[in-house]
Amino acid sequence: MNFSKQLKIYRETNGYSQEELAGKIYVTRQTISKWENDHTYPDIHNLIALSILFDVTLDELVRGDVEIMKNNIDAERMNKLSVVMLLFLIMTAVAVVPCVYYLSWLGLFIAFIPCGISMVAALKIEKIKKEKNIKTYAEIVAFTEGKDLDSIRKQRNRKRDIQAKVKLVLLFTLAGGAITALFDFLWFLILSH
Image 1: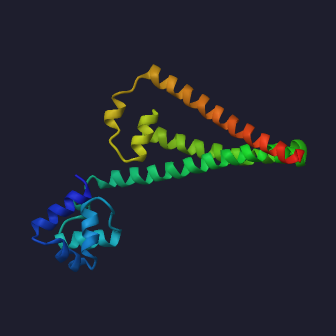
Image 2: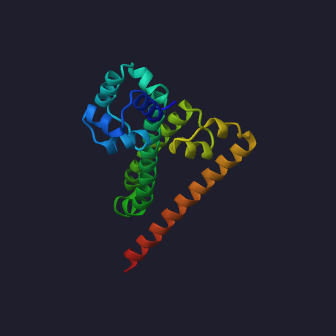
Image 3: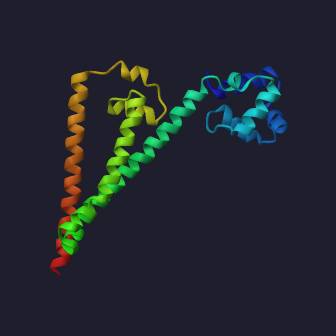
């Protein structure tokens, strides 16, 4: 059971309306509504106030939510790392030709610094995937959206998963090559004028 359901049960059991509960812990009625509808989550001070008011432990109040919160934090981290990875790969594609043009082979090494940053982000993403037992694209999407992974894991097919990974790597490589080629072409157009 998650916090939103627990909160509503404790509130109703104690005979409080959302407005009355809000007044007891010095928040707005809209805040209580957002908590009960899973739109936001209270900070630790409000959790403590609720546990004291309802005379329950924090564990009883948030039972089951600790793992959900941990998964949400990891999903947010995975999303941020994905943005970093893609951004620095695009920076690499854009920087290769100008760096090589102006700095010769030394420029090639400089242009690949963003690529190294991108690879570090990719390794961190892989670490999260390994910790959470995430293997397929569908599982990644479900994890980042906070959905149940068990039903998706049951649909795993090793051969199909390997094929999907190969396709994803090829598609990613082609997209990176296309971006690099486009910027190379634009750069050469600029230099020729």
